[in-house]
Every structure is written in C-alpha cells, then in structure tokens.
Image 1 (cartoon, rainbow, N blue to C red):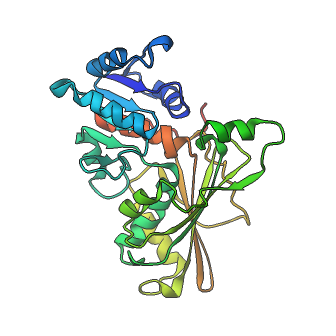
Image 2 (spheres, rainbow, N blue to C red):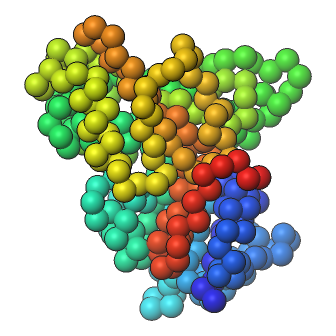
Length: 311
C-alpha cells in the first residue's frame, strides 16, 4: 500500500485531508504520536518511509520541511505543499488539475506539487478560460471580490468569530498585498496586478469569488451566453467543476457546496455588464478536497470526488 505522511495533521487542512482519506482505503496513513509531532527526527523518519508527504504548515515551516525532505536524497518522498510557500516557485507543479489540458498528467508525474489557495482556485477557474481564449487581455484591469467563511483565516480569526457576539462581516488584507495574488496572476494569465478585495463572513466555511466585467470592453464583445458556453467547453471533462445553466434566484449564498469537492461557475449578465461567480467550499476544493485530488493523482489512484454532503 502507498504510504502518506501529513506533516501538520492536527490543523484544519490536515484534519480535512484525514477525513477525506476514508474514500481512499488503498492508502496507509503514517502518523506521529502527538508528543513527537515537532521532533525533527520523527518527522524525517516519517518522510523517509512515505511515498507522499503533505505539508500542512506555515510558509516558513514548509520551506524548512522541504529542505529536511531533500536531505534524504534519493529516499525523499513526493511532496504536496498546502502552504503558499511554493505556489509560484520554480520546479513546482501547480496542483490545479483543471487548469489546462495536461495539467493533471503533470501533477501525476511531479515530485513537488503546490496545492492552490482557496481564493485563487475560484479566481483562476473564472479567469483562465477567458484569458486563454483571448477574451480577457493579460493587461486588463480586473477586480476580484470574494467572501469566505472564517475557517480559512487562521487561529485568531477563528477564535474571534467563534466567540459570542463575533463580527458579522469583515473586509481584510486592506494593504492590498494578499498572498494569493501572485498565483492568481501567474496561473490566471494576468500581467497587470488585479485589485483583490477579500472579506470574511460570520459562517464557518463556504466561499464566493466574483469578477465584474464590461462586455463591450472584452475582445469581440461576447454575450453572456457565449462566455457561459466557453466555460462549459473548458470544463466539460472536469467532474469537480460545474457550469450553472443560469441564475434562477436573486441571491447566491456561499455555503451551498460545503462538505463537497465541487466548484460551481455562474455567469450573470444584463446589458453591457457581466458578473462571473465561482462558488466552492474553502475547505473542500479550496483546500483539503483539492489536496486529496492531488494525492490520488500523485499515487495513481482513482479520483475520490465528494460531490454530495457526506460528512
């Protein structure tokens, strides 16, 4: 049986991966006793005997863990890094299998894979087909608005929202330097830096990422229907990404895909305006679900897609 070690298994992403591994009984999970989880020797031995090591660590700790793994030389395992430390680093494959034709095969054969950020997953899913299709220019002014559940915001944010009377809604990263922007530019095909405005709501998980555009400023002045058809063609063979037939309600709420590995795309158009929306679970396709998808590819196992709420 292939062996998997999660370095940082007690965190939110690590726990989510462990839960989803129930769909992959072919994998033997290597764990370290709680008292030894920070012991370098114990971690190094777990890496040595694993086929894939998943890093669910802060960025600097992830860099240190990679150096530790590489000290094993030929015995170094494949690495999937769930931090943002290596998402645009040379020699790493971006773990978004739906990004382009051939990306899943690249993940499958890679020894170093970076798991995408949650916001970036939604933004790249929306931007990629339009930039690749020549409809949106790499130099275009792009605004990305997003709201997420508080579970992806770290210990301090989680604690604040889980206290009685926690904040109802917050804008954050107002220095406009959010760490997901470099990967959005790199894999979304943008040269001009987008204006990214993230926010957090008073709910645990779920996410909406939206991009407003003017149709008459896009190449060829496409209709909303044509853009929707472009998405359908781009993701026709991607079971985790669904393109909605249209908006049948006045509202979209962010929690509809919680506890699934799905991402939905909505195209809302009226007159010269269009609004593109991606909906996903920031802990599913935005984190642990994507990680398990990549683990399966790296080990040559079937995709353990969770398409319904099963937890």
